[in-house]
Amino acid sequence: MRRWMLVAATALALGGSAGAQPGGEPPHAWVFGSWTGGMYPPTDTSGPRCTGQPTVIFTRDVVLRAPTLDVAYRQRLIETVAASGDSLEFRLLPVPPQNTPLGPRIAPDAAFGCPGGPNTLRVERRGPNEIVFPDCADFPSPLQRCVGN
Picture 1 (cartoon, rainbow, N blue to C red):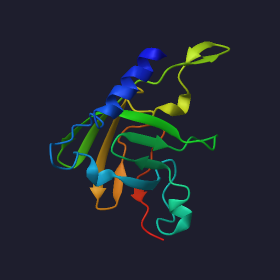
Picture 2: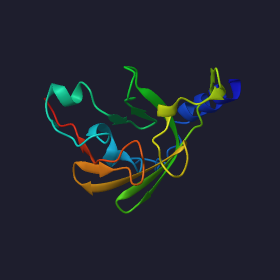
Picture 3: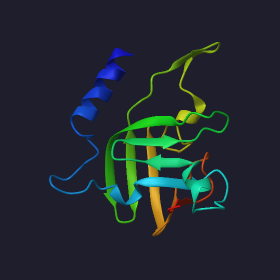
Picture 4: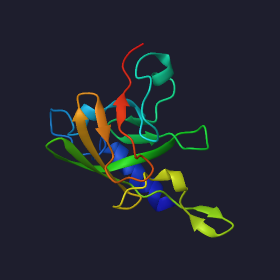
């Protein structure tokens, strides 16, 4: 637990080692904001309904996802981001396991159900306001950006 906290604190102290360019925007700046859909096809992408309950939120240092059966967002700290054309490859800091009756395990909805494991997330841009998480079982549908009120 202490090691995880030290890694997280170090990443935040360094300004989020998400691959930011000196004097410029980080490679994932185009994805910053709130997104809806992913678990189901997006319906309402504008106004308070979308911005009040987005599915995924991207910031400089954190990716938050709405869990299926809980009200609190799952927060994942970004370790690195690699950009390639219209796609991003996120490497997330490992989450500490929780004690369960079956032994220590990470929360099932702390990850994204992606083939690279619980600490990776690939994002592809399909348009100015649409992204997908390819081959991620927890997000079979596209996500659309929440826009204004």
